[in-house]
Image 1 (cartoon, rainbow, N blue to C red):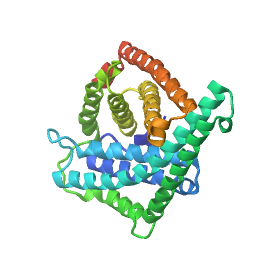
Image 2: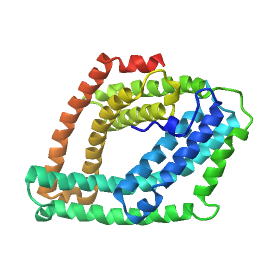
Image 3: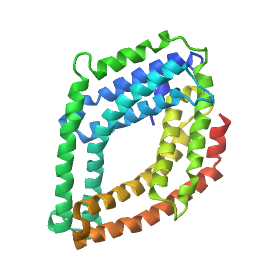
Image 4: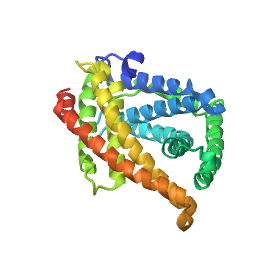
Length: 309
């Protein structure tokens, strides 16, 4: 579990804008530690870089602040929003490649565990796999192009780093990093509970996806503001990750069904149709799992403990 706030050497008593500056710069540099590996095709580096960029995007959105309780000046919040949009474009390109890696793992895992047959011997699944690999290759080229462009002199990598370091020079109302955390975390928790209804069977899959994203934002908020909390965050983060992971597989399987429909349409091979049916059955199991984890979190006072901060 990453303790980002500690790694970035943030003090809960320093100003919110100073803490944000350290946080943004730290996460940006952490992401680029995996840049070379990502561009060379290292799947683990790609995953790590994508996670760091997601943490950064969440941290930036945290400091954009709601209109009802702004953390920084309007001008600075607009700057952060614009910079986050640029980071988002890069993150989306990494995500497109990573998503194909995840989908391929599901196809191969199904053939190995359920069929106990190499995927190369299952015609429909092999065709699906080839299509995924072709689309990944196209997405990979776009990702590498974006990474190279960002690393040019005065490119995004350098530009964002300079901007992040310069944030403390902005004229803002004094607010401690600890006080910012007290505003941000409740807002993130409210987002989670606005999607609680997605745990019902009849809820649309997109609602479950939104619940997953809101849980991830709470987790990243804890990791990037851990120095502000009186209790260790590791046990709470663990519970959030458990729910997030189960919801993540539900979303992955929805994406798989949509992808196979897009690729094959009405001419879906029988083995691919059965693969989708297996995914649907698995989703039902996963929904039961996440409901159990939610109840366990309630019984263990997770939400009450988080609200207490």
